[in-house]
Length: 158
Image (cartoon, rainbow, N blue to C red):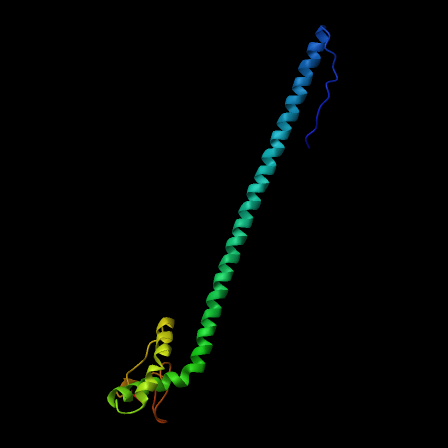
């Protein structure tokens, strides 16, 4: 791309050497303009490539964030399903232990405190309270009787 030029003209005092100097200057100026244009073209290509690479990096970061969220959600769902038997019985055991402190279950309840903390941090909420009636919704509740119907009254707390 960039080429060096050799001084091929003679520097005698004749008028033709002045013309040669002017021609050489014009030729060098033309080469310089071409090289500046080439540099501008390369600069534009690099800028476009940087934009593409920045966009690609952002896409990858977004994909990684989405994967992280999906994995976190999947972990929560899987863990929740595995803990469901404990979660169903915890409110009842806790309420019984509070109502009857003489039962040895009171010390057992303190072991469940981390479980409650975990559920709270994941945004899960208890639906209904033990020994209180709650409107039955099959999307939210496990039935406590075989004959309970969706939207048909209340189910009693465990």
